[in-house]
Image 1: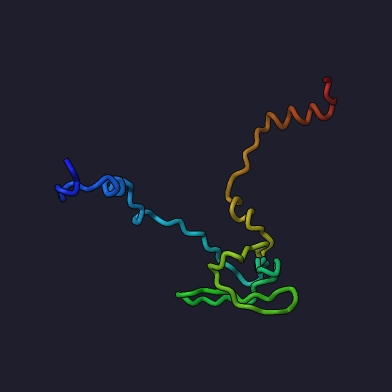
Image 2: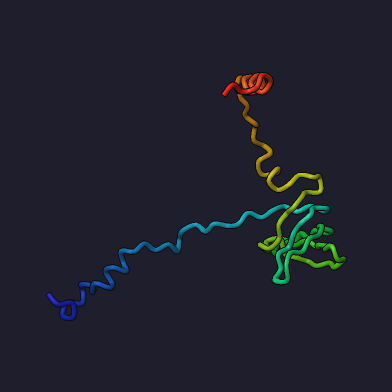
Length: 127
């Protein structure tokens, strides 16, 4: 049977394109936005190189929140929070980004292994 004579049957290209899944409704992954605080030390990646500074002012506009940064050379700039070139180096309280991310985890220790390790260190290894 020829597809040109029977318009109800799609040609092979149309049949293949109908079988591929349409991912237009797939959920998009958003980058997590960080809550900046006054005094946070940040880095800013620019084409000229890395710039380091501290957050001086928070601009809490619901449509486009931003931070004012005072860089090491004294220059002040306003950057949007969702700018991917901004990174937190250290919080004003002294915690790093990694400490904030993993700080809530409990540190697991096996005290029996620690005791054996200490005793082996005291008497030296026999191997």
